Each structure stands twice: as C-alpha cells, then as structure tokens.
Amino acid sequence: MNVTATLFGQMITFIVFVWFVKAYLWEPLTDAMESRTKKISDGLAAAEQGQKKIEQATIEFSTRIDEAKTKASGIINNAESKSKNIVEEARATAKEEAQKIAKTSSQQLEQEINAAREALKADVAALSLLCAEKIITKEVDKNMHDQIISEVLDK
Amino acid sequence: MDNKAPATDNPVEYIQHHLTPLASGEGFWRINIDTMFFSILLASIVMFIAYRVGKTVSAGAPTGMQNVLESLMDFVNSLVKEAFPKPNKIVGPIGLTIFVWVLLMNAMDLIPVDLLPKLADMVGIHYLKVVPTTDPHTTFAMALSIFILCIYYNVKIKGFGGYMKSFMVHPFGIYLAPINFVLTLVEELAKPLSLALRLFGNMFTGELVFLLIALLPWYIIPIPGSLWAIFHILVITLQAFIFMVLTIMYISMASEESH
Image (cartoon, rainbow over all chains, first blue to last red; front, side):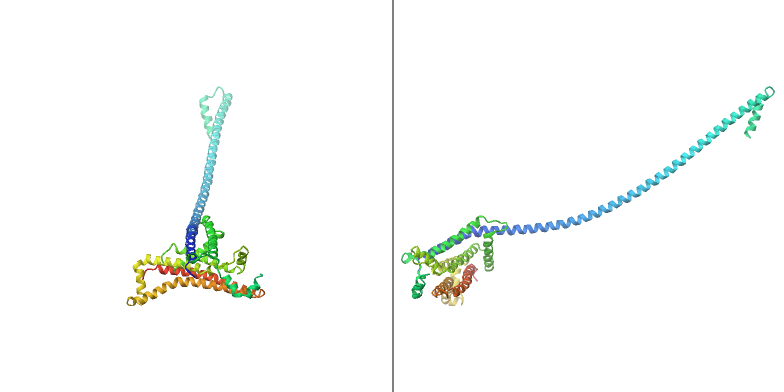
C-alpha cells in the first residue's frame, strides 16, 4: 500500500459518513428512544397510581355500602317501632273514644230515661189529679190532694 | 461461465487479474476507483436509509427499519457504556457507522467472485475489485481516522505534557525513559496498524479462497464454495464486530485520565 489519494478519499468518506449517521440517525433516534423510555415509565407510574386509586375506591365503596346498610336497617327499625307506636296509639285512642261514646250514650240514655220518667211522673200526677178532680170535684182541696198523690207516686 | 477453461489454464493470471484494482492516476494521485465507488455506494445506501428513518422517527412504537436500527443502536450503546465511564457523544455514532459500513463492505465478498467483474468487463471495465475492505486503503483510512481521534482525546484529556509523559513513564518508570518511549510508541502505532491489517488480512484471504474455489471444476465448486460462504458470513460479522469493539476500546483508553 502506498499513501495515495485513495486513503484520504476513504478517510473523508468515513468522516462524512460518521458525521451523517450522528446527525441524521443517532441523535434523533437517541432522542426518540429516551422520550419513549420516559413515556413508558410515565405510563407505568400512571398505571400504578390508577391501581392504587382503584384499591382506595374499592375500600371506600365497601365502607360506604356498610354505612348505608347500617343506616337502612336503622331506618327500618325506626319505622317499625314508629308504626307499632302509631298502631298502639290508634288502638288506645279508639278504645278511649269507644268508651267515651259508650259513656255519653249511656248518660244520654239515662237522661232520657229520667226525662221520660219525670214526664211520666208529671203525666201520671196530672192524670191522677184529673181523675181525682173528676171523682171528687167538689170536696177535695186541690193542694192537699196534690201532696198526697205525689207522696204516693214517690213511693 | 466460458472463462473457466482459460482461468484454470492460467490460475496465477486469473487471480492477479481479480486482485488488481481499477485505478487511475499515478503516484499520490492514484485513486482506486472501484474501492471508492463501492464504499461510497454502500455508505450512501446506509445514509439514505438513516436519513429516511431519522426524518420519520417516532417516539411511539417503532416499526420496520427503525426497529432494526434501534436494536443496532442499543447493541452499540451497551458496548460503549461498558467501556466508557463518562458519556461520550461521538463514540456511539462511530461504532455504529463502523459496524454497519464494514459489515456491508465485507458482505460484498458474498457476491460470486466473477459476477460483478464479468458484468463490468461487458461494459468495458477490465479490472474490478468488488470488496472495498480487501483494499488496505479502506481499512487504513478508518484505522488512521480513529488513531487521530485517539491522539486528540489523549491530548484533550491528559494535556499535551501529560500525553508525552505517558510515553516516558510507561511501562518501566521514569529512569528508563528512552526505552519507555520506544515501547509506548510501538504500542501506540501497533493499535491502528493491527486494526487495519486484521480486517484487510481477513477479507483479502477470504477473497483469495473464493478465487481459488472458483478455479475448481464447475461441478466441484458448489460444495467448498457454499461451505466457505457460510463460514464467511461468520467472518464478515465477526470482523465488523471486532473492528467496532476495538475502536471503542482504543478511544476509551485514549480518553482515560492518566494513571
């Protein structure tokens, strides 16, 4: 081998080639690969976070459900006791009312009976007075006889 | 092919003919046109592909050629990272370029030895050496470029004085400075020389064996020819790899702090 232009030509070719590969392939590819690495690691981190969030959400969900369940059963119990109370109350008031009604009606009845009795008394008194008047019109003092008759009637 | 008979009649001439480069000019301005043509052609193909991939490069899922080049890059990068404690911007591209270029130039070896010269002969070109790496100019060009880069790094990292000092004190200490100087000089010069000659020697002998096989009768050629070609795939890749690894090693040694 002699030192010829071929050697220098090849050297120049080599240098240009290296420069070209560096500028147009190596650097953009390196950048792309780096950004891809970043993207992938970001994505993995995001996925992990998502997983964590899901776990948290699951836990929260189950606690909420438990809460709701206890609340619901509390509400149901409340409602049941309330309804019992209401029924009881209703029963009590109904009883009272019925008693009241019975009471008043019996009182009324008594009053009516009494009134009737009074009326009858008066009627009988008047009637017997009339009879007596008719029988002994002239000889009997009305007032005396009234007294006697009411005494009899009272007995 | 009809030149088989004359070839076997005069094997020395046949081989010499095949190993004569297509050259023009005299003395310093002697240019091996075939070497230049094929090496620049292969470099251009790679540059074209590199340009296209570099233009459309995407950070998303890589496809097609980008995949190939990315795995090559990773391969080179892992070697560079092993050798270099500090990140170095130029070694990676050099390694990749060397590997691809040497691999492709070596691979020209696998084209049947008579095919391209015969075609060239038909259009009036009578000498053609197809494999650029069988031309020592190519291998020495790369080795010298790397040698110059090594000197640059030596001077840059150690300083000119430090670099000179490393010539004086290794391997026997400062009291045997002259001997040290000669030894280190030989050691330093042996690096590019061995780098260039290894590749050249391997490819040259490989080509020679192909030529010798081509001299055999046509009915025998396929067996040793295919065997040698298959074996040569290994040699081609291995030589390209060795050239790249040694380049990375030499540059890494040059950019080490003085010890």
